[in-house]
Length: 223
Length: 323
Image 1 (spheres, helix red, strand yellow):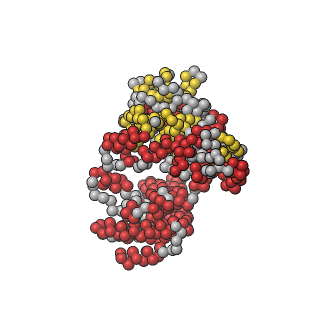
Image 2 (cartoon, rainbow over the protein chains, first blue to last red; image 1 turned 180 degrees about the vertical axis):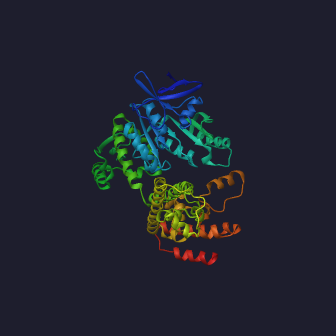
Image 3 (tube, rainbow over the protein chains, first blue to last red; image 1 turned 60 degrees about the vertical axis):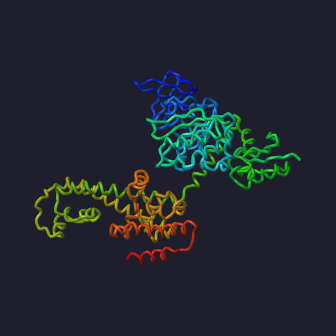
């Protein structure tokens, strides 16, 4: 097990494959069907790149992810908690994750996940209406968004504007297919980039193939 | 007088001065104090009477004031707050999930279950027929409906069944010992059980649709209506859909193929199983589906906004056109 340049994230070589791992926040418990690796007293959870866009972005050598131990993270589009569980691993007991999703069905899973993880608060709300959940969260160090909505860039900027601290990092996973199926993904990414650069400082962006098709991860910093 | 802001969130009620420092606060000790609007108002009232704030929580949450809210929220980003954020959010989310369950969910689960029972019963019936044909192939060949087949082989003997289909002789069926016959009849009983379960669920669905969206049901019938609702995810969303979308609900794959590659557009989705559409000639189906979708869009809106029953009128208009 070796450390990566991102604190809280570890890597290992399995055959010719490079895999990422995070320290398991709840020892002995799996969240989805990931593998657990034990080394000495510490247990690690393998991070599946085809299930998590954040993991895919790191494997594609994105130069910054912004999330580090002790951070407060607003996670929009938490779904049933696959990636949020790893974010919760990374920020550890000093940090905190607000996991937000719109669908009651998946937030139910998230509540069960949060029962074990005291650093993850499940929130049922619509990310498009920040004012409806502004009284449930605080300002955060990092905003991470992965929702499949047509106006996801607009939603992202709205949330960063209200909840992200100055100089805080913000990550945006874009699914080209959910913005417009007919347009070429590269054109959509170009449009998103232009929108982001208007209000944020763009740091890096990476396409996520072969792990996820027609996806791109953007990382930016609040001006 | 200095401007003051009153902001109530999950943690408590706070008064900020114009430097956005907290001057006074009352913290909630339980979820109930936040959730119960009476108690919350009392708390806010206590602070309001002392400090007379210029902005209340309600005003701060409105869009034009987001600049002020931006200055207030950093106060809560402190380590001591997170265990409270955790427990209050857990309680709030749990109660929101609890409230979110409604008839939409029941209808969607019921229609999905009816379809699944159908699938399972079909698979098992095919196996039963294969099995039973060792014993009495003539009878199995003579009857098409699985449901009838299962019912008859359970209630009558081989001789009676052969007489019924006027086959005097059993040429191909083997004589099977009782102990070998019993397992296949057991399977038959289970399948029979499945069909009666499906019957019960269909009745339940009919009742549900009758109370929840009777206009949609009057035009499309309980099963198709429920399928439309399943594709739209909720009656609220179905009521918001234009009729052109309702027309092709269930044909998403064909629709996206059409958008992407320019292939022919789909003319109908789940509406294909509606008798008007399925009975019509190929070239008329699209038109009939469009007319049906028109009326369904009206019906869904009336259902969602709890209007009067106009399903029979709408139905009569289509009946006049197509039958």
